[in-house]
Image (cartoon, rainbow, N blue to C red; front, side, top):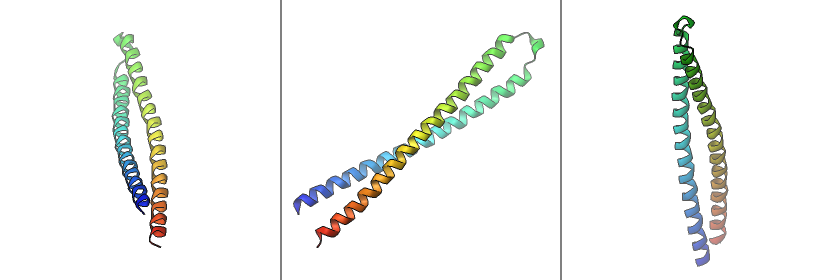
Length: 114
């Protein structure tokens, strides 16, 4: 019986660890979504700025700089989207493990009380 209590306690600790990890991943996803939004706004800003610069200004270097900046921001958005997909996958896996652990704990308690 004492062994079951220790095992049960370890399972509770593991469940708490997974629950905290799941919440941290959720916060990371939200953070990345903010970064995606911010970088999309920057890319749009640069696109609009580029529309106002005309060739008769003879500042081709500025166009090149703006294009490089836009590409950089768009790359960041892509990077954050990839990271979000990875975080979402981790959350799904943790959620599934937590569900399995919860069911196993219920089963163990059911058999311990018999």
